[in-house]
Image (cartoon, rainbow, N blue to C red):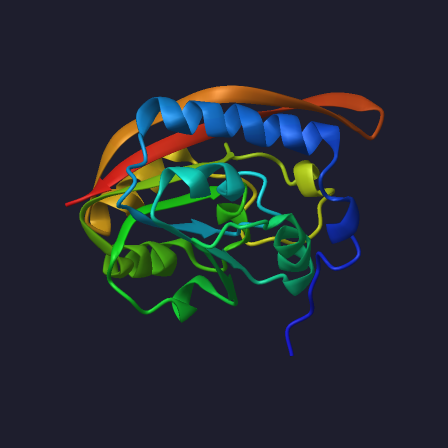
Length: 201
């Protein structure tokens, strides 16, 4: 049985800093992709819905995926008449349909065990012309997660772009859109956040 590493934090997840961070990403994403009312979308690592629940009214259907049941439980409490939101508690690979117009992820890619394998599956799930948007950290020293073991301490955006291309996507945009500052061991540390926009070819 997989341990829900977010169980103890889920109830307090939606603090002002995280809300502000997600709003910044959401604004940047919507500058580059305009969701359409007939689209079917999926959010990877939806958490408590801080990004996805703003996208839901813009599309026909939104699937919110997360491995943390506790995070999804918080998300469920926010659903009020959002009949177009479907919850997927499990891995990205549990979604086996090939009908997605839009896939997006904010600060969840660095938790994926194998990004190349994930990109291959995203290519499988998406229609030709579908958009994929990822927001995450540029390569850092591990201090963002206080040196707890995670699969990726951010990403080299050039390498990640090549991985997208290899999986069958055209990379439309990669840019640093925000810098997070955190106090780490009595030192102010800056972490760059990037957005990558790709389209299924």
